[in-house]
Image (cartoon, rainbow, N blue to C red; front, side):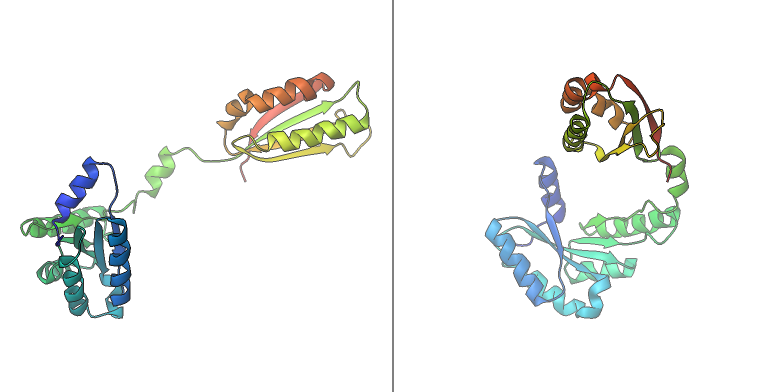
Length: 249
């Protein structure tokens, strides 16, 4: 199957919910390996030549080989200019045989980026060539910081005293808790401790770190936590208090 229209290729992929691999090549060896792998798997492919790699090969020679490989392939192939630096780069690539182009204007402010990308698109579309843009998340950091919630871990602290059980039983309960609770989704760390001073109001503690605040509820209701708490912990720890706190550092 010969070189095909990239737009048709991508629209088919979109309709049928699959992706088309685009692979940057640096040499004839890259080209041969990409084609061999895609023909073996019967997968359509985009052969991509990035302007940032032109120092490693002669673009005109590489394009000649790439187009030749595409036209004799047994699978659908498109050829793409990746990360071109200017409209002139896009025109040159189109004239050499690329049927997809991308000019990276993400170093410009948003308005300048859109303007250059639009110019490239107008020129390329007039030639039937597909265009990829890179409009960028640049200059938007403050807006995201103002609107996005911080992602911070949450600490879950339980202070308690035990009754009706010997020291060996307390140690066994703690060991079982560390094993079970640490496997619950969202639990980053489980530690147990004993008070340093003999006259401390509470003699034992759990220190559990959750990935974020939402884990508090999912952890509380998780079957493994409920079973451990009801069967092993609460029966011997009637005197207890707990607190959840956001870790700020």
